[in-house]
Length: 108
Image (tube, rainbow, N blue to C red; front, top):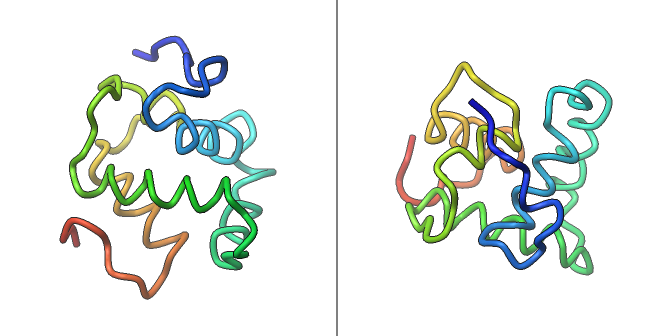
């Protein structure tokens, strides 16, 4: 069951940047059109892309298990997935966005 997408209006919510980018690039309503753009953006890693730098930092925190203030259903709601749990989804997404980089937190 999805929750209200509070991160869309509360930019100070924990992990808001990560959730907003998931919502904008991966949510099922737009995934087919937008996900490749996120993959390209992450792999390009432009030094001046502050939003993506924050996204990656928050992503690392999530993979390391630091989730204070994150609603338990926030990732699933932002990404719109129902076939995986958060851990599997996050590890999969890291591998797609940052191939060749070690998954933070030691997940395989």
